[in-house]
Image (cartoon, rainbow, N blue to C red; front, side):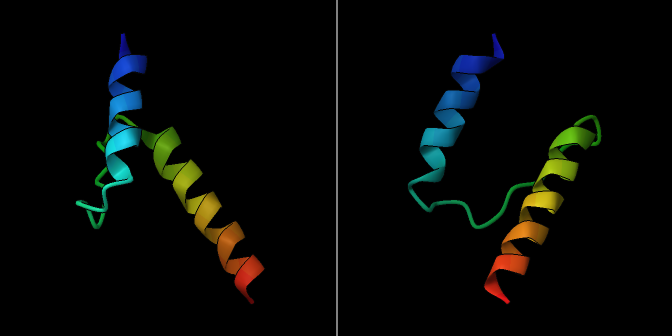
Length: 46
């Protein structure tokens, strides 16, 4: 049930209408993943 919603959200990110995203307290895996991706990108940029 979440996949169609998630797909729509991902598609909408391409519009650039949102500057940031707030994760809920029940989404620790998403927060962890985002932090790790940011760390890896930062390493590549230095």
